Image (cartoon, rainbow, N blue to C red):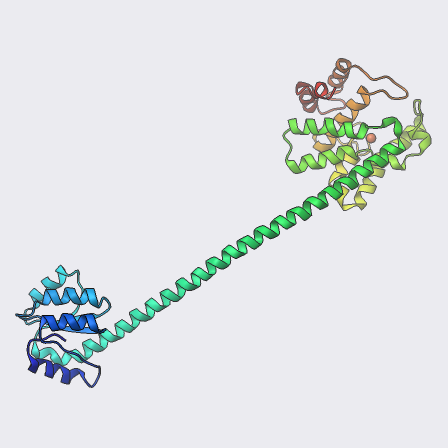
Length: 348
Ligand SMILES: [Fe+2]
C-alpha cells in the first residue's frame, strides 16, 4: 500500500494482516522501487497529495500488470476521471478512512479473481500445448496416411497389371482356338475404345469397354472346332450352335469376379438395334451401351479384314453397309459418331 500517513498505514495493516502479507511505502520513490522489486497481488494507493496517484497507478500497471489496484480517495469523481485516463485499470475505489473496514472483502475478492485469472491462463496454456501436440499428431497422421495411400496405390497398380495380363492371356486363348480371327479381339478393342472415347465414356467405363471388347468372344472356347473352324458357310444346326457363344461366355464371366463387369459386353454383343439379335432379343437402348459399342467394333473388323471364306470389304463400302444397318442392326447415333470421328481412317 502507498500512503503518506504512517498512522493510516498502521490502521490498514491491522485490517489486513490477519488475512494477507502486507507491504507499504510512504513516498512515490519508495513505492516505485518496491513495485520493481517484489510481486504484489493487490496494490492499495492513497489518492492524496503529495502522492501523484496517476504516476503510481501507471508504474503499477507497468511493473505489476496482473495486480489489482484499489484507489483510496475522498473525491470519487476525480478518482474515476483518473481511472478513465488509465483505461479503467482501477479495481475498486474507497471513499475514505471510514470505508477501510471494506478492505478485507475487497482484497479477498481481488485475490480470488486473480486466482481465477491465473487458473484461466494456465488452462489456456495447457490447451495451447495440447492443441500444438494435436496439430503435430495430425501432421504425423497425414504423413502416415499419404505414405499408406502411396503403398496401396502401388499394390493396386501391381494387382491391376496382373489382372490385365490375365485378361490378355484369356483373349489370346480365344484366338489360339480360332487362328483365322487372329488379332480380331485386339482390333475390336481398338475400334471400340476409340468410339467409347468419342462417346465421352467415364474412365471406369473405358476400362470395362477395353476388356469387354477384348473378351467379347470368350464363349467361343465352348464352340466345337468343326463349327468354329469351318471355312465355308454354316448350316442351320451349326449356326444354332455358334449362337450359344455369348451365353457360354457369360457363364464363364459370371464365375470370375474380374470378368463380371464385362458380362454385358460378352452376352449382348450380338443383339441388334431392332430387337432381332441374340441371345436376349434386346432392343434399342435396352441393349447395354458398352455392348452396342463392342457390336459395332466387332462387325466393322469382321467386314474390313480377310477371312478364309471372304475378302476384306473396302472402307467406303463398309461405311455404306454401316449406314444401311444403322437402325436395323446398329445404334444409329454410334454409327454416325464412328464415321464422323474417322475412326476407320485412323486405324486403316
Ligand atoms: Fe461374337
